[in-house]
Length: 520
View 1 (cartoon, rainbow, N blue to C red):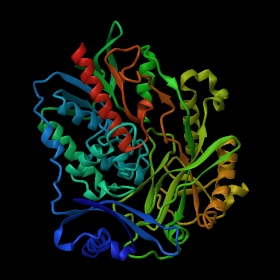
View 2: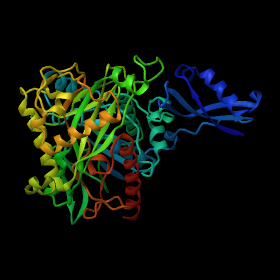
View 3: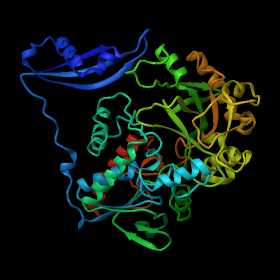
View 4: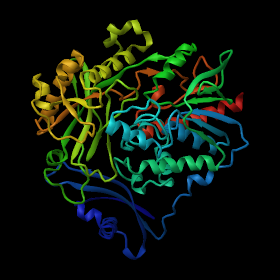
């Protein structure tokens, strides 16, 4: 017999596993002598009352023991001699597509423009400390993709897109904490995710796949509308029965290559704005009604949204106890992102705060055709760089000065290692973006008392929320309608928005590839 119960405990009580187990048994009203196991299946925080509570859901097993599921990796098979599939990109879409292909008996050959996840660290240090941007290895490019060193948040609302549990369990089997299977907002952390990414690579290699770094794709091998392979580094040919394109939201050269080769791409809406950084103590005081927070409470977070002048303004990629990092992918641009380590113990909280950019907002960029949104994105990023001193110092303003349209005489402390420059963001940002952000953050201050404060930095530019381009594909075939054998996947194709949604999309695409190859 299995009895499901829900508990609301103080943080210290929830942290005491033995006590939480006893409370679950008592709540189940099952005889304690008959209870074999108590398995916690869900954990969340309820901070609506005067004191935050931890909400636990548990299955209490009486007269039968909990039977753990077999490891998913046990279903993988050796594929070294099997038909090959090329995957461009080793982010979550690419790596989870590769694992799915192996399970289906196909050999993945992965190509990535960047370096392996460990070697990437040198290039991250170069951009953080010296302002040097390697266009092939940075916070967006390289093994693990943009998520490997920018937080590892796993929360997704894409429940209809695939098997979230399978994606999560594969992460656990490669070294993630089992806590991600039960937390309402699971998180791995930028200090732990690289090891997990490297373990996934080792699994792919162990079962006969291939992974090639420093291999930017420079051309496609096309014949009569059929994708037969790719060219890397101008001269290295890789041929296979299908190509999965999982290059992430910032691989602009791939969009230009597709367009040049006559493979249709489409402009799509995206979002652009700033990253706002508060002291974490302030956010804890607002959300938990206490500061400092209790020992067993995680750093608090928030999610905010409103409408301003006909466009959505919303918080994005909120990083409690986190850092703001430079995420440019080319020299001459300023792009910022956020990340947190697993302990989320930085004294700062930051969140992207962005405005929806619709296609009708890009009329001044119509001469760029399908690349209108990309051109707008680049122009803003370059304007921020040109204001500065040639380094990766980011233009910034106090939140209160941002809304008043006045230059800040000084700036609050920041986690952003390259440093901040006091700047007139009200003049540097496009007028429509600024006015909507200005109205939006004032509304956020009304919704979340204490959010609107001179202690917060507004840092520009948060511009890589999603791709400004979509690569079309069939709703069921997942294949490009005009290039047989080409399967767009993940964020760069316009079909995902985070680690888990990209991973599930990669799995879906891999299954579609298997169907295509069986029919070919």
